[in-house]
Length: 302
Image (cartoon, rainbow, N blue to C red; front, side):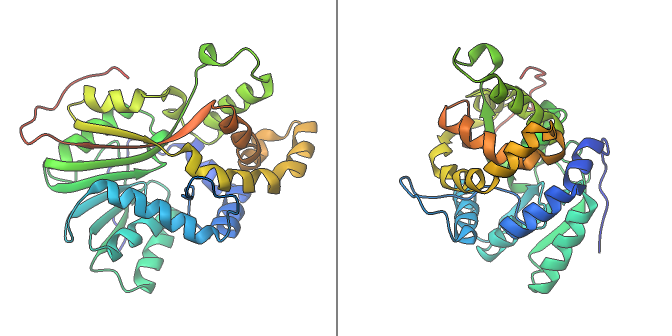
């Protein structure tokens, strides 16, 4: 049964991005409906099969939580439920939320098809406002490339901190990129423009603020301890190279006609690989703990 949690906003830009035919077809055909990068061992050149790399990324995030079987966790931005189902097979009990109703409908169908209703739930809700979750009631919270979509990252971190039990775990796989004033002078102008356009069209306002190391500091500023960060940029490179090779010729046509905003995933695939190789952006895995004795900090700084 679909339940609706409190939503702070419909976020029409995000809804439009996921409703676009390029997103719906691309995610389904290339990634089987999954909406995150794959994990490859350093030095890997051949990206196929993609499904194995996608599951490996999910296992990496699961391992970061360091929780025993039976732990209650929140999937903050669950999409169609693939990550939640992977975690449930590992023994966790997962509450998945997403503001995109189609995602929740697909997630619920997948959960039912796999007979996992007793271990995974999915509901329409916004991670900015988790008032339906009691204080200190969850063992873990995680995001898989979804915190970047937050309109108010400070509020989201407050909510994550509030709902976690003392000693609870937070694990996040997210992006970062350089600010304009940090870009090397030889950076092609089209690359810096692409970064801004991708953030805007894909509704990633927090990604626009996440410079290297900023997320780690945000967690510390909001009361989290044992904050650790791992750079996974090299681990996602094979998949980005695959996207680059697949989308290069179409992107030249798109660029010639100035249609980048209409084909933002194609631009992200091509320009994302170019930017990654130049170290203009990267992919981080960050984990932290809520201290055993804690005071919720009222910190509005990023």
